[in-house]
Amino acid sequence: MNFSESLGSFGVSILLIAFVLNLLKVIRTDSLIYGLLNFSGAAIACYASFLIPYFPFVILEGVWTILSLVAVVKTCIRLRKSPAQIPEGG
Image (cartoon, rainbow, N blue to C red; front, side, top):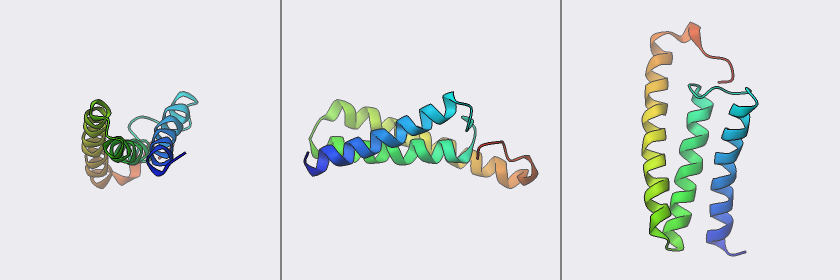
């Protein structure tokens, strides 16, 4: 397995971990950790797709990265306003 395949597998693994942890109700979709896992996994997978180059997935993962970053920022703002209400799992 070459570098781009390994990198892509790592990024997708992070995304799957977030998905499975959410399904098992370990983390919630509105938690900071869920957003950070989605952001980092998508960003890594996007870069790996760029290295291949496979642009349909660059677009998919790029949009996923941007939307995940927006969710992380919103979560940080929400937590700053009311830190006593940190949701379970993140």
